[in-house]
Amino acid sequence: MPLPTAYKDDELADIAALVNSAYRGELATKGWTSESYLLGGQRTDEETLRADLAAAPGATILTFRDAPGEKPHACAWLEPAGDDAWYVGMVTVSPLRQDGGLGRAMLEACEAHAKARGGKTMRMTVISVRDTLIAWYQRRGYRLTGETQPFPYGDERFGVPQRDDLTFVVMEKAL
Image (cartoon, rainbow, N blue to C red; front, side):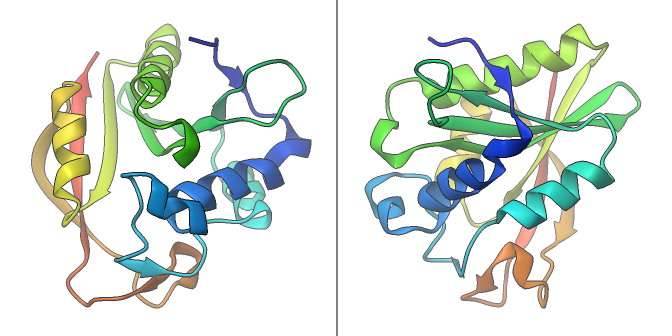
């Protein structure tokens, strides 16, 4: 497996394209992580990533690529969340590279990054109706906390909902 590297500012457009291809794009139908049946529109864009990173001190995007200078084929958002907890989100693997262990490796890299910085707990949110994805995270040691968060209806930065019953479940894992 490749070693993770932190994003570079000039590749945020490539990261946004990767994320959109896995979650919503034409290629998303080739991967099992697609949420295009739940949400239309894009998942993110360069401007949103840049603004979110600026608003979250300590946040980063870890990436995997085959060689230096190549576009990333996997990434994840990682951010300190207080109380020795770290938030992990936007875990992405190109639909053309899924089922090869890259998602698991990316998640493990995020956990190692957080632990090296004093993290004791990983937290994430997952759309509640994504049963297969929730089960995948559970197999990696994450547990449902019982906590939910509302889906940001009306904020198209997160996509255009195709149904009206979306919420987030909160999952966590002790490191």
